[in-house]
Image (tube, rainbow, N blue to C red):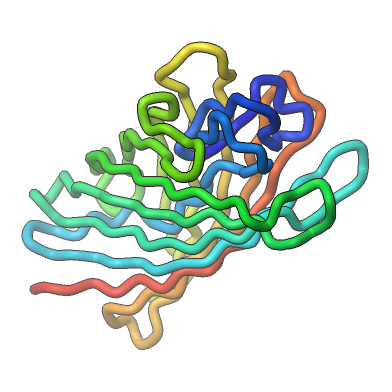
Length: 229
């Protein structure tokens, strides 16, 4: 959830983070925080009354002009509740933390992001669309300045009885002036040991501004557990 106006290297700087709750949602933050942009889900909706919870970790890096570096650690939990066979409602919380990686970053800075919204099934078990809206908060980070809309398309391709390939494309649209729209693409697996309620979710993805010269990337791991009949 964080972004910068120029996004030359897709890192947020100065007094304006703008788009994203998954863009740079850190207006007024002195540290460079990258917005959450992982997906860690599939197109298989839960069904009425069922719940899925996914704790996860993301390692965030930045690449620009051929140089890459690790810049951030994210810790979070994502949840969905089945409202109908074609509709889930989702919620996501993420804690963004910059480790001590040199004088360019302030290790004392961090932020929190929250997002929620519906998830619709368009092709059962294969294609779904999520429409979350969210904001960030923390030291010198004000929710009123960081709202973002993040429409996401999720595709699931079964590779084996207990393994799926999950692809997602996300647009990070700021609901305030002064920031650019960002885009993210993610590729992950869904591995269900024994075909049960647990789903291991390794994932990688990139966040970029088409007009910028660099990009951010993530390596994430989540573990989903589904509850209910």
